[in-house]
Picture (cartoon, one colour):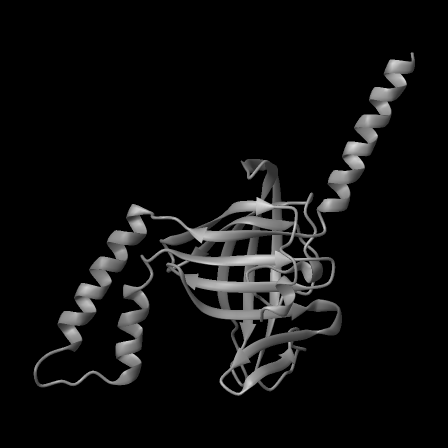
Length: 235
């Protein structure tokens, strides 16, 4: 009997420790090579380069950026997240080069980023009617479709992002497929840096549309339920 009581107590203590750890941690959402995406991007870049770079036609900066954007999609990309109960730090990388970094404080409705002049603070959540436009979301879940990712059981969630641009009647739609876990808590219902104002599970896989037929997938790697010392002061 004493041994049984001890085992029950030990299991309870272990479970409590795990629960306490799920409010902080770190992981990277990494793009992994997908043949369909790679071939699509290669074909598109070749087509654009051929059609738009004739000797008698100079490329404008927007077109050049457009081609460079698609040319870079096949490169290894990642979003590394560091999160606690009230703060999220995101480092975006292309290969091993840091390309963007920003911090979200959901309870304070703040998004802080670094620009040439120093740190810049702006609202993270945009209200409807905002002069810069605003977001809304439609969410459906499928608990029967599951995956085990980084040791956590995740279920499928479909998220339709609706962006209402100023003076435009119909919203721009973007449909994501996520695999989320309820065992990890991220503040503010954070998902991919979007303006999501409702709580969902933590996304450990994100399938983002490149177009109506091709999706780019990002999957969590290196998940740890701990944080490096002083990580939120590195912005």
